[in-house]
Image (cartoon, rainbow, N blue to C red):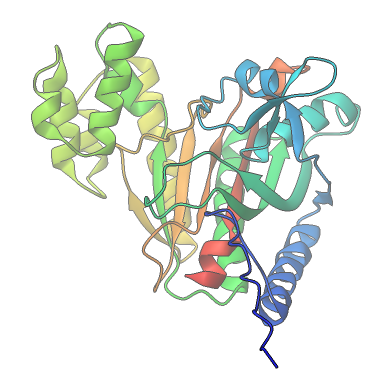
Length: 312
């Protein structure tokens, strides 16, 4: 009797996630740990749709060029959500502006991004995030970064550090130029490419900024410019850093931090931990996003990269 030929199981699309029993248990346990922490901070859980109109991300100046796009039966262009901050801001603007500020929310879910193969990045991954709308900007900056650290510690991560920057520092040093040139400069800063920066008008200040490295003195950074916007950003950055260090949190000040997402308007930060080569948490202030959907309300938040934490 001939042995029945086994049918080969077709592979899953690359860059997607499959969770089996033990993985699912660890995932749900981690989400529950974060849920308890956020509830203790007075946050309300919300659920967000996976589908969104592509125009929502364009209107929010999200800068996403890696959306999964398709058309619905009404001829509208839809996108799978590439992140959860903008959909959360939209829900707040639509249904929560009648509440006393600050309003705090949290959520969990998959996000989807078109990325190149063999880059080490996935096209589907899970995030848990926290956002706060309104409140005193300075107080919420400090409290939100502290909450981010406490959240990572709750998950059992060791040697948690915060890399801290301000999204307005580098733009304040840029000379006038067209959008293409400015983006090229920002890319060079992200690569820490001092040679490329030296070719641009006014690039010497940006080269000096990179030469400062991590955790430079406040006076060194202040020496680069004297305009009010720049000095306000320096004061904000070092003020948050000093507060966090006073709380026993290890902080790396990175004045050249340039977030890929362009909607940030102030403090930006990343959480790193022993055993993880990439940031396991990212966040920052984005005061101009909510106003694109409703009243102007300042906001700050962060997302925990649970897949990176649980799967290394």
